[in-house]
Length: 438
Image 1 (tube, one colour):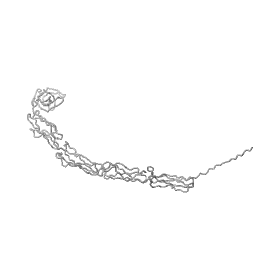
Image 2: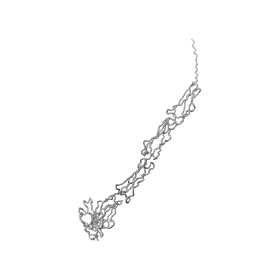
Image 3: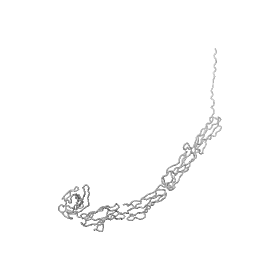
Image 4: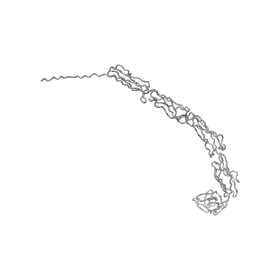
């Protein structure tokens, strides 16, 4: 049997040439970026074409295309096309947003109307508004104005568009004065009446200066009391044309009434008279004249009591007590006293070798007495007997020290006391007497 002959078939595969295609178009953008995807300068579009293996025929795509117009808010896309032997293709950019122009400030608004006479006298809010035909307004300045003072205050504000452009500063003008006038003083309607004091109503016309809006008016104040013991300030104010008020005190000394003199008392003792009184706080000095006595005052000062010594027992003395205040007003009261020999023994100036008895008259209602003994200016004894006599000892202890009745000159004093010793209620000094130890 004859076998069939297999024919070997050789297939040769030959690569077909690549098929040419339509052009491929791409681009890039060159410019200054702003905010929110906007450009704030001209934009150059750089086109690039891949002819895709086919022979170019025509193109509307320049190598560099300059776009230099502001666009509307929606933006503008640019398109070009290219044709080769395989066909035509077109390409468009994304929407270009270009805003090269700064926004315009169209106005400014104040948060409120002026405070007084067309002036603002405390911080006021200012807000600006503007327009922008391309990207639109993003924001405008807004802030409180708080100075400096000026009749032509001119704070400036700006607006910013969506693309990031900022407008030129735009001022708005108004009048601003937040500073009170400087009250310089006051003019009294007359000079002080006496010793720098006013003793009847006076009128003060205040005056001031104001550097910005100027002074509008000042107070005229009439002061007619109350009395004051020392110089003090009368308040007055001035207002400027912006409505600010300044207040300052003007110092005066005012006393239209004489001082008061009350609770005048005079108690006679042994060759002494004890005077006491109460004077009002505006009293500057107390003057006492005694009749019979010297022509000059026997006392002049601010104390509330006075002891008149070396008087004659049994003589009725008249004391003229005058209270004088700063402007020279006077209040005078008269009182009398008759010194009485309350102290009995030793007799005045007596000389003793042995310790003496100190004796005195009993004082009505007194429950005990205070006896004080001095040698020279030094107190060496204080005792509180319940009866009207005290026997001195040769030696005793007082204030932590021993004392003895040595030769020398001694003076003793007697005060009546009332109630219990813990109450310490003492009456007026009733007498003082001297004796000598030899």
